[in-house]
Length: 332
Figure (cartoon, rainbow, N blue to C red):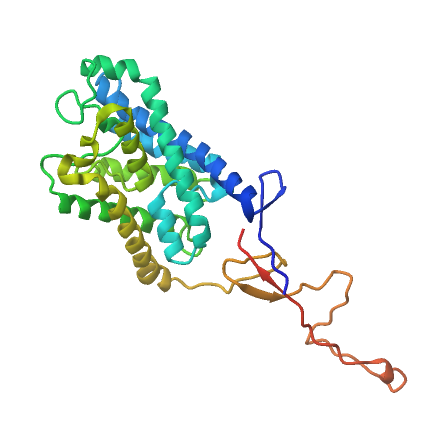
């Protein structure tokens, strides 16, 4: 049994997934992915909070939605564009992504989001101080902590907010499965990133008011930690009945349930074609075993072809030996 565990860079160079090289490769690309994608979203919030003339709630949704689109384009071929820890968790829990990749993806997501918050803080530092009169506030008319993380509004309770975040993330995961399900009605090739960005915009403009639709632990917790370090203080964790843990836990539960709902009630009802394996490529994740593909130089005989064997050449005909070698295939 021969096993291989390799991905390829965009230029075709094989990349080993074992050891420090894989860790650095995936982590480095995830940092760029998160830092770039979330800078657009957090920057749009800064415009809305600091100057109503230049920002709006619609602008926030567009910033986050198309920030996700850019992130998918940047790193879709490298890590599957895992920008959301809840989506990564759901895919691991449902057997679509191996658990060994979970800590690498999430670490990259968290560090990238933290760097995005630091970037926005640096770019808008003078505007933040001018708006707030030199004080870094979490609540009140000159609050600026909301640029970086979500906070529970007055009309919501903690547990209603929990249900809201779980529900929205469940809808996100369900729609992501639909967009990428090749046996259903997927997005056209090359348009997945745009469609996913539009999905984020739709969730925001229609359902985002109650909790700010964090729907992603990687989007909310690292910037919140940054604001604690940067001077906003402990209130970033204690405000809203200790709201900080809800955007971390609720999306995990919601994404998992949303994925199950799609697979059980939608995916299971779609006729599936048998998996066709044409090349002996390694797919370790699902442990699929197939026989070696015969070389093109070897003659083949259709099972429906009649073969004439004369007495003169009967002795030259021997039964074919059984094929016994196999390879484990790993999804790229």
